[in-house]
Image 1 (cartoon, rainbow, N blue to C red):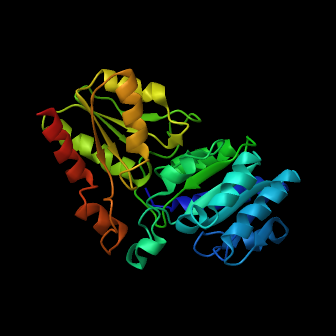
Image 2: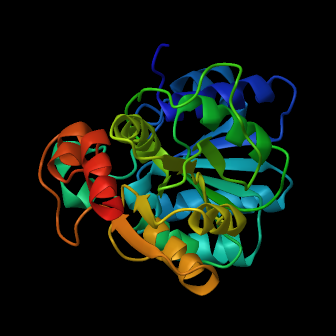
Amino acid sequence: MSKIANKQMICEVLMEASKTDKDIVALCSDSRGSGSFTPFADAYPEQFVETGIAEQNLVSIAAGLAKCGKKAYAVSPACFLSTRSYEQAKVDVAYSNTNVKLIGISGGVSYGALGMSHHSAQDIAAMSAIPNMRVYIPSDHLQTKELVRALLKDEKPAYIRVGRNAVDPTYEEGTVPFEMDRATVVCEGTDVAIIACGEMVKPAKDAAAILKEQGISAEVIDMYCVKPLDKEAVVKAAQKVKAVITVEEHAPFGGLGSMVSQVVGSECPRRVINMSLPDAPVITGTSQEVFDYYGLNAEGIAKKAAELVK
């Protein structure tokens, strides 16, 4: 199956919906190219707003449009959207409960060699801490399509983080199991539960295949809905395994690992290991090179799982 970047799929879904829904408005902060939104700007110029490199204005304008009845999608690099415009996201969008979807593109370490200034390894913690703000990190373009279609039907704020590059799909066309705000069980297991989000879901799935060859049964859960976290799925998985591993393209504090640990610790105590980026500026390299270096790949996940079970 061909690889498509999640950000490109977001544009395609919004373009399709905009054929009949003229209330959809896309906004960019000099990011239409990097966000794959040039086709939208060309096709629907009257439904497109370019703010330039002004992320705070981007979010506030989006909130204003939403208060006028528009469905605003603000597209900007995740590293800037989640930091420079944090107050606007908190007050203008979440506190005011406006229908703004914040699209954080090139999330995690996908800006590679540009370094820590362009990495967004704290956004899950930051955005999840805001009341009324939902946080979604889809694993591939197929799940992204289902997520954006679902978000078009509601009027609540949300932050969606996607990577920069096309990634191998986790699912197959036409058979994407999706339910809004409910985690997806990619495969069932009884020895260890691997709970992942975003680009970490595919290597988690591949790790389960490696573990199966070693006689270890691994359950893999795609927690694309980081907030609201699907606590029921976490508890159900934890109750039937010996240990839980969380995998995320994020700092070790305040992200998926912290959230899952809270649930498991209070509901069904098990050992929880969090696999994440380090609490330090990461090495320079492509996303895959960074993942490989820190063991955030199929082999690294399988190794950690095997150590826990044995």
